[in-house]
Amino acid sequence: MSLFTLERTVPLSLDETWRRLTDWPRHGDVVPLTRMTVTTPPPTHVGTRILARSGVGPLVVDDPMEVTVWCPPLDDEPGLCRLEKRGRVVLGWAEIEVRPGPGGRTRVLWREELRVSFLPRAFDGVVTGAAQSMFGRAVNGLLRRE
Image (cartoon, rainbow, N blue to C red; front, side):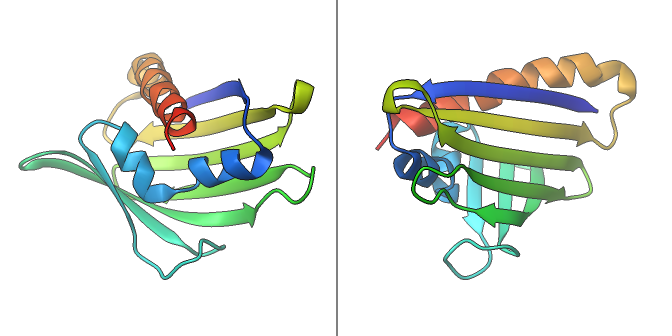
């Protein structure tokens, strides 16, 4: 099991930060070799299902997820989204939290527990390092792009 937290403070409003981080198809724009598809009707809500498909050619891994908590920020109140990974290969959960930060900025907390079903625990450190690097770049890209 790989458990990690990413933290960022950005010069964006709570609403704009939330919008960028929960625009699911955009995740595929910043994660290499990945396409994100929302498989339920909009808008996002508890029960929304998302499929991340990563890979090239016949080497593809599906990462189906379901939104289990959906609390967008309201005024200056924090927002929280929780995704449960429902696949056979990629398991775990992710939480995206936005809250007011210093000087009118927004603080982002991205927490994730990730398990790859066929990898023994001896690989947890490798998975954690790779996931932190990949998701860190993805969060940076989502917050940077319009």
